Length: 136
Image (cartoon, rainbow, N blue to C red; front, top):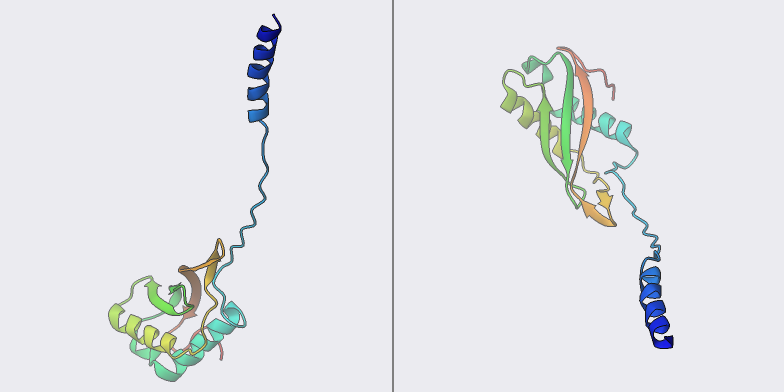
């Protein structure tokens, strides 16, 4: 009878101990890509380059445009998409890319789980045929 009670108590106690939780605290530090001085500084710098290197009057650009910019793991601007599409879209995109590449400051890349990752930044600029809403 003692053996039976011993075996029964061992069998019952094992599942009780196996269900205890071990708590793990994992700190995940995620951050977005960041331009030195913030997004306003980037927009101002970008508009300086647009006014310096691009003849914006050559394009039918009126209204708000969304720029989707890819920042790679090293903080470099690698791809630019512009919405909505316009007449002479490829030339407009090439000129905007040219202005973008004139910006010499590097971005701080986005961080996910402590590792730099590629990410997208979206910013909007309101163009009219003679100027934009951003002053440099």
